[in-house]
Length: 195
Image (cartoon, rainbow, N blue to C red):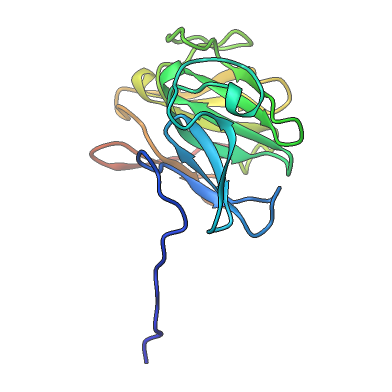
């Protein structure tokens, strides 16, 4: 016998929602991206965590005074810290949930390119996950560089896991418990194995 299921709208958005996850800072809520901002909702009320509902740009500041150009992914690295992909500003941002302060975590915002290190450059980063093989780093798809980049949680420094024309325009990624990384682009799903 099939279970009866229902669907209800928890939040209306102004743009495509690229990512959603549980809000560990406010249990019972979910966090989602809404173009220029990150929001949290309990299904009744939505509140901005960082960014602005209608204004884009680049600005490190607190809560609604901060600016993003397009949030396409995020991950909670602790209960109080979110790391967000600012796709069209070409960088990774850090949000402190206690203070509401958004700062640049990795990459040189508004300056696309390809460079590793502490002054790294991205060219349209898209998705982000925690690397379950190397717990001190995150993995980021870097679309126009055809790369999967590593970002150190400790200081935001960047490395390159793979840069390949085989995986053109990488978008979403996930990882299994064995460490294999699965990446999508507009045409295929790829598996990347590394140790």
